Image (cartoon, rainbow, N blue to C red):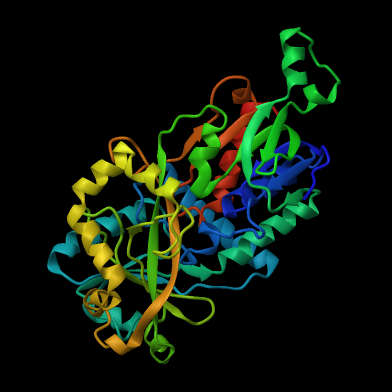
Length: 430
């Protein structure tokens, strides 16, 4: 697509759910500004936003008072309001967090206390017999019932945000992979000559945004919400390598459709603090299917959904990063186990049967996969907070990068967009 020197007051890079939600919020707040959204793929929501579990989370897991907790609870409320207003189908199927071992009960009770402190609506702590009232085929010692947890098709939600952005006057350019940001030479010369408020186009729209074919558009200000590419976008304007995005692929299994009736809502395990990821769970989908899993293995390509999807640059970028090396060493047993379960899916059967004993090997087949953009610091810690960066030099006054928008980013998308809107307004004095 030829840009033909298009100029915009504001350019958003990234057509996932956070980018589209923020574009919608910006265009709704500043309708007189000319805006564009750039997406490297031919479709929006092509990666994380279109390859997730589809769960609308209630905010149980997160530290009380934390930004993640506040954004999730607010995001859930805003999501249901938006979905109802736009007529987007969703289901409040609920979530059951189940303790199946005695040592999980104290952790479950702590989760319940967290949920109450986070003002998660409708939470109930239930005993093993009451579990059957919500999930007749599920067994356990104790559970938490969250009635407000739901499911939705986040690809449809993302594209609805985008349509609202377009209706507010925004333009969307797909097939535009951003490869470079640059201050125009005209703008730089004006600044060196101390020419204030110049009306020349180079000064009005000083940021040049290039794609892989050398085409560019001009912008006054740029916001990036790049997901799996967020760290690399930041580096284009002088940002740090840290935190690094390490891609972890989560592979799901599919429950035989004849057994799908056994799962009414989401069934989740009690998180084990010894391991970095949640573990297998049961997720009903809007199309009636049930996903089981996921596991967590290093993706050999940032957008690689199969083992045969390999990008040498992405692999080298991950394995040479000190943080990944430390994480891999710390969890070497867990990691090898996940790789083995990826190769032989039936090895996950035992964990599934702890919750639903009636599942047999014939009931599970390989299903879809997603890749999570996991931000990681040099010490090997998973970064669970929001990270913003502007890089260095002349571009830093014109560009803001969302380096990390941690899970549950889809649930929290509208609340995150409000937060980004405030940051953008303050940084660029809109």
